[in-house]
Length: 181
Image (tube, rainbow, N blue to C red; front, top):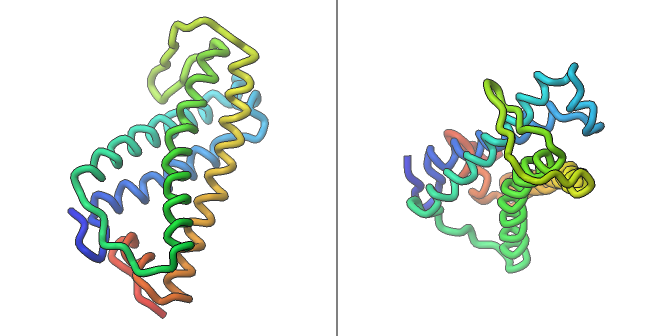
């Protein structure tokens, strides 16, 4: 359940991979045209998209709470620039995992649209500011694209560490571990 000196524990791994799946599912269910997601034809997609987004937010909060309880494995030896890049990427991912759902909720509420989840809606009673809501939703869309690029860099770095550097960075988060080739 808990992390060891060389591997993340099952709980941390579950939070990590659940976050990956929820982000990918929310992205796949979104459409490039933000307003087509709010058409009557797309109500089911929108409900799942927004539910997955809220679940991302919940999982990230639980993950951060768990991080206070469980320590991370010891750091792998690496150059200063790699360590700095790793911290920047991790910080960026956490910031985006919080900012993306937050901008979605705020943007839709400012536009007077309820947050539509599977099973129920949440309509916050705040003053509408349609133009501000539209701007925030544009930011939400840009952040949604940014997280895929940064997560791609994160995954590529893990693969680089595994196959080129031959260290245990990837293995520390892989369920059941992975063998070096």
